[in-house]
Image (cartoon, rainbow, N blue to C red; front, side, top):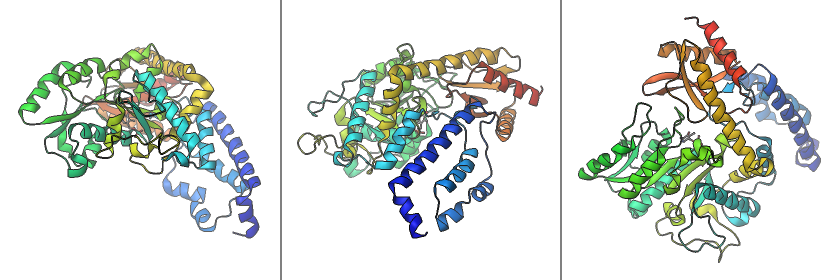
Amino acid sequence: MDRQHSQAVTSDQGFLEAVEVVAKQLSDYRKQSRHDDVASNIQPLDELLESLDVARWIAEGGMDHNSLQQFLKTYLAASTRMHNPAYMAHQVAVPDFPSAVAELVHGAINNPLAIYEMGPSAAAVEFAVLNWMIAKIGWVPEPLQGQGKDHASGVFTHGGSLANLTAMLGARAAIAPDAWERGNPSDLVILVPPSSHYSIARAASIMGLGKCAMVELAIDHREVIAPDQIYAQVKQLNAEGKRVMALVANACATGSGLYDPLNEIADVCRERRIWLHVDGAHGASALLSPRLATLMKGVERADSLVWDAHKMLRVSGLSTAVLFRQAHQLQNAMQQQASYIFYGSKSAGVDLIHRTIECTKAPMASKLFFNLAWRGESGLAQYIESRYDATSDFYHQIRSRPNFSCPFKPESNILCFRYGDDDDLQIQIRESLMQEGKFHISSAIVAGVRYLRLAVMNPDTDQTTVNRLLDAIESGWPL
Ligand SMILES: *Cc1c(COP(=O)(O)O)cnc(C)c1O
């Protein structure tokens, strides 16, 4: 790299020019992605490495704003287009641009905020966003001065998986306070529906409880927890000398998009003094809509909740809150005797480092903050309602065609359906559609049956999109 070039890289002018190039390219990308007939363009790894010329860039450097422009063209052309209405595959947000602005700001200033002095603005925003979420749940927000123990608390982590692990650590600290120091007692079990996200089983293994500590709850034909059976199951486990460390409920389940009946589950958990953890990674955002919030009824009696902003709140990955109804339970999760809360006396603000597995901590709440600040809470609520409602319309639309069926009415923006009556056919259809690139959809097994699956994340996906999809399936695979 010559001297002149390396100066350009560090210069303020270089930064400005690069950002201008990126801004223009991304703005074109968003526009095109919305209107083109391409949802994804999945090229093989070897071809992509070659067309991106990755090895040469790594070895030689020397990118400037002209070559950046060229590079980005190739890079974006081979990217999956969340902004296309026919993208209906995975539960990741179509990011709204204010959240992208937050990513840029962080990239330029790099203020990881685990300790207040490392990123005061970002820490202040995270504190306020957490309290906004806490109020949505119906818990007591955290005061500026950390006194008393009736308030809630939380922290942003990199994703629902890490958040679920954090919640399980809190649950363990509550039932076995010595475990941090001495290891696990052997009598702990976690009650889960079979549809629980794999990160819960992973957390159990990481914590050394072992996967065998996972006990499956009774469910109905839709794989939703049957609350009237919990009591007997717990009694049976206790008779076998087991103690229930936590019961995990889905809000909603990843595969089916169905909510477990939190209110009835909370009744049993309260009575039996069982830690209730609600995995609301996808569906907790329903709390923003007064109408849809009924799906979450009972969450206010949970002990912990996981809530992803990078699913239904139009935020790029990752941005997840793990929230605890009682602040001291989160404080205890990471260390043995942690009844003190650090700020006030020693710090000018809030030190989040005691609450999280991570050390250097990205300002994940800022992405959500910018979306809230730009569209308002009501703007986000409208988006969520529109996607849940559209999915309900698609359910009727799909069922009205003779060779299509749906196993159950959707409760969220996740919809399972089936064409014909053959498991392999569903996989074949999905793979072939992906290869063509016009539609990007996913697939799931619910109650032992293979389905095609839509996650209706894109604000522009409508009945025309779904009609095109159904036409493509019917004409490609006549029955
Ligand atoms: C998506 C999801 C997760 C995992 O969250 P990540 O943010 O992808 O790590 C966990 N639980 C449920 C119910 C989910 O839908």
